[in-house]
Image (cartoon, rainbow, N blue to C red; front, side):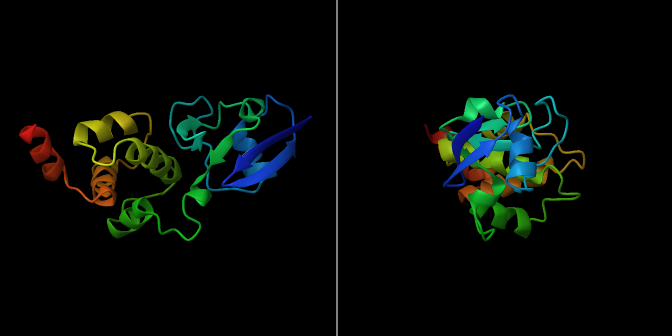
Length: 162
């Protein structure tokens, strides 16, 4: 059964069972390897992509539910790796093993899309579903602040002034 949707701005049609997880369609059918398999039960965040502008766990999203939708993967965030989050990740040396980082960046990108000046609490809440076995959470938070052009202190000063 053909399933049509957009991936990273391009129309695509795949011939797979509608209950096939989007993750496996991205990786095995479309050869987009940036999205990772972590737990398979939507608990770790390694497979996070954007579906119609919102973060979604691709390991538990049936591709049939994506029909006529828009999927954005880490490859589509910035083809040359120059998205502000990717730059901050590199500059602050966020990744250790790197396995969870595509999902982390995609969740952070959704946060900044909705809240361009997040507080530490906003970041912690938005990133809570993304696990990092290496424990780089503090660097992740700093990178999100850097990509937003703020520091935690900047945002707290603005909050206190209200």
